[in-house]
Length: 243
Image (cartoon, rainbow, N blue to C red; front, side, top):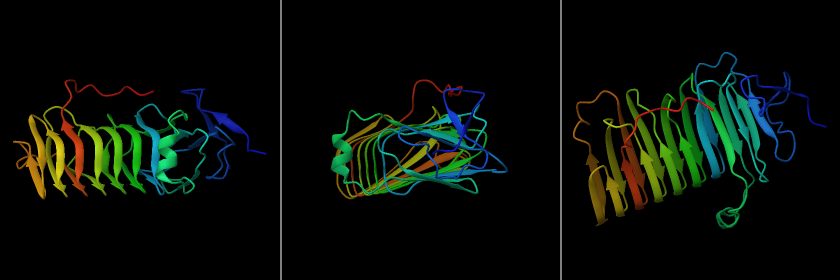
């Protein structure tokens, strides 16, 4: 039997694990996960075995550390010292891609503290709208396919890394934000702001005009090649107001 669950007063649709509930308790099929903010001054979101069909959002109104809900593929979730670890059972990537009708998983992060996001085992069909978040670093190890990321305004030099190749990846940053893009392993159909590159072998190193003198900027690196990769600035810089 699952533990009793309280309700987040800011959004009654999302129950919060009651005090004393084990961090890995997910409340059964289609269950919800959450943890109190406690004394955490920063957070880290870790996917240890891939992230597929997931939406990651930042919410400045969230009272807890994080809140998440999942579809039929139920992961193990653990929380310790501000680190949220999500571990899906080991499943072939092709099996993930075949389940296009499966309900998306959703993870909301408390935007009042800074976060690092780390994905190991690859990412596919993932959306990360991080506007309003204080992002320390974002890394994807194992390749990325059909990835959409909206970055927040950076503080200092923020590193974004994709290891293992990128295909159909779109990354947006606030207008006027300085950025550098390095690609190793060749690139096809690449867009970096107004620059478009049809095909290029070897290594690319592109910078926005204001990169060298900027204090707050993004350093983006992709290894393993890139196909249909765009690093762009959206027309609007308005942030999310929270869910």
